[in-house]
Length: 121
Image (cartoon, rainbow, N blue to C red):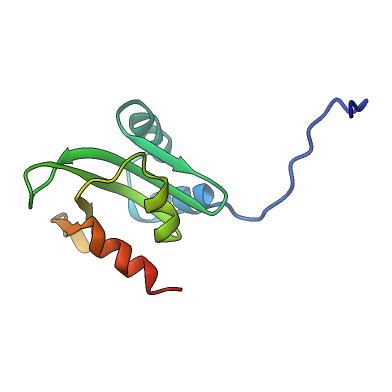
């Protein structure tokens, strides 16, 4: 059916995962710009953005395997959904908590992260 409607009226879904991620940047990341990081990951990594999940990731050399691994810069939402939306599976997933100046990289087998994500079922 063709209508005479000329405007798209989006549904209000409340606070999206991307909005929650931007709020986290403002609260925890200090001088780091959310918009600049999104642009960086669009150019050199992966940006996952749906109303229910948001993630920034890129491929790195994994500290455990010395092979390709995902480094997750930011993740908001359901872990299973985020992991399922990565373009391909790599054996290792890494992240940095960054709380209280602790910038050490945490590294886990991707299978272990998937198991942790299944616990919430």
